Length: 191
Image (cartoon, rainbow, N blue to C red):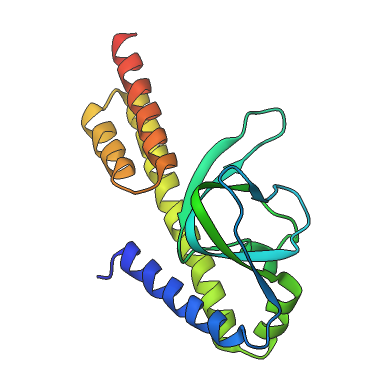
């Protein structure tokens, strides 16, 4: 069975290739924001999608009245802001450059939608990317819920397994979640 990483790499590669074929006719700009620069703002109208060509970004989400939480990082080959092509026309998170130099390809959402009208392969790859992200997020959420249940049940073997799986990703947000869950488990053991 194909791993999530292999499947994600395949989808990202095809999507980059399809976007590259449209760049001749698609208005776009290359931007090089410095480390710390916000490139997409949560709740702002989505006017562009970004393809990361170099560097790394942090993705934070803030719920009303709460502190912003790191939910993911993304690097070269990742597309940002594509969810707005299909659903809500506002960004769901804030994206800032965390490691540079960052090189981003900015494409206006209206222009990318126009290209998608005439290219079903592009539509399918955008949907495949969205589906892969949903699948990965669902798996991570299931692990976190299983770990929380293990904390309540004081089931250390299950908690360790869940934390190890969350920590095995390259995503710092999942490493943090594993650390918090592990701390909860230790606190529950001593209570």
